[in-house]
Length: 605
Image (tube, helix red, strand yellow):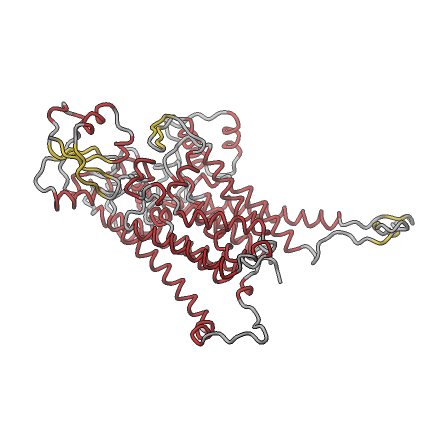
């Protein structure tokens, strides 16, 4: 049996003389295929309900209006000039939903991408709730489909039980639900990359048709977010390894040996063309096989590039492009890389914009400390706060199983190296703004965690027993599910129980980890229900327009502090980054309420 298939391990032959199982258990075993399908459906339905209900309630986050505005221009005007720092595929996916929303856009509009998003949502007669829901629905559907990839990948490695564990962790992941319900690019990029790696893994059986499909998925990831570019060489190397495994003779290509006179072994000799002798080594077949693997990798690279070009041509078949006047200058190795990539000019200019962001100095906030610059350990620390405790334990156990269980070990490079490389790359970035920069972690490691159930059959863990390992795994999955359900519908500010839960996240992290402008609509409802007809002062961190939701408020920082009385509403990120003036206002105010764990209401005397 191939090392990459483990689905049959759940089906053991009955032991002669064993006690007959309980009739109920016997009946469940007879219908386990149907039960498996039902369990998968329930997990995905739960996830769909969580994402759709969250999408319906949340107002636009900071990035979404930019993507929605750019997608509207893509669909209606076929123009690439907006949001060049991100490739177009993710926004084209968002645009498929906008085809049903029919947002109006003034053909003569002129402004930057932030003004474009505001214009589409709030200044063109469109219903922002309707436009945002239609923009989010394609990402929700894609997130659910990637759940099936998680399921299929884990089933090949660990059978049905492991597949259900992996899908449960994916479906209950607060970060995946939070960002999968938004019209953003993080989940699509991570999902396309996982799909590519899964197909490369399947190519260990036969390269066709999996490697061309894997290249297309990898191209889709690169055409969605530029942060996936470092994964290209890794996936191509994994593809070469898969071709090597698929094409090598059974048992390897090492040449045979024969005993020598001293009791050792030597390689036999055969006559050569000149009447002499030569050693028939495996070098020539290995070189030929290596050449085939390299040819497959080169072909995949061509497909990746072609998919990126196709994404741009889908927006504008004539590929009209003028570089922005304020395009950052790039030097050294980065300039060399940009200059030699066989990608469209707008993609390469977008890379210059991204490098310009990396050269800037940003503010960060971690565990109550506001700082300028970058902390290399920010992302691991943020993941520690934002990952459910049971999920983190299963990630670790699954990774250990991949490294120690012999039949799973071939899959370890496929599941562990890509997220490790991307995490290491993201840790060198200058923007400490949220775990969304590492969203590939819960996607990839959900599959790894599913391998935990396979470890109970190994000798090194046999003392614990398969049943005990299964019970612990089930308990941890239930812990994750309960933690996720209790945070509903406030997935974006989730923090695990060790850090006080979602109500305390703003004390540890900021920005898209907790407060991304998503609760303006909820604030409007709260003011209407509990604080009607009161003077409202608002410090809002987001891209929404408060008046569009019926909130009439002024910024307290624009008037003398002595004139600020009544209700003071402050976004939690603004609290984390408060200057001296705002800190003074907060120090003389009384906290009375909160909205969505992202905005705090104070009473000013």
